[in-house]
Image (tube, rainbow, N blue to C red; front, side, top):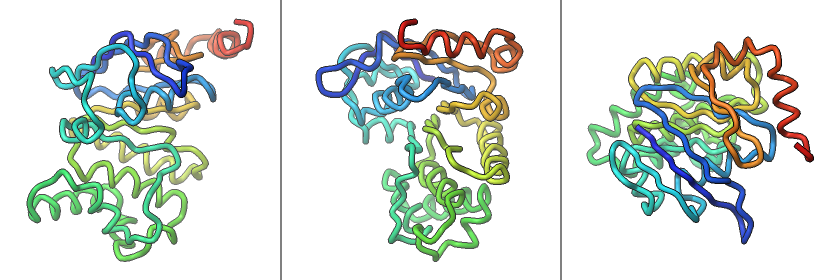
Length: 239
């Protein structure tokens, strides 16, 4: 589904990503773990071409899309749920969702996607005519995920979707992600907390200082006695 080789990228003249390579199979749910500043969000931006890639290749669904623009990646089936949600607060829930469906053709498909999102998140159906800015934080996160799903992606990228959410909302969103994977969606999830990642992914990549330093099935990673020490040793300034 997704193959990345030797990808670099950053801000200004500085590279944040250090020759990152990864593979994600169709239908797989993968967690990208790491502390603040590890480069996780930078990688998500580079994957979606919202940050220019300086080197490396990106293949998606069998196509070389290394030079593709963001809208071309969306058309190919890639959708990002950005950190911080970034919904349009003056717009209603339904209008926010409609903005995510720009790539769709035909009213019939639009209605179908609305129904899909509302079935996944019944709270959004109840608030369809409510302005996004009046929703709770958890509901705004559901809306951000729903907006990404409106273009019917085959790969969903989520950047810190659980940040600051109450445990009950986390449980609801985890259940939704599990359903999406059962429906065949491929998922790459940026997360800092292993306990949450364990609940909705089967494999984990650990990122530190712009490099992928560890790859493991999530159930095995959780059993490593040295995980805490390894994590902080690798992220220490002089490591």
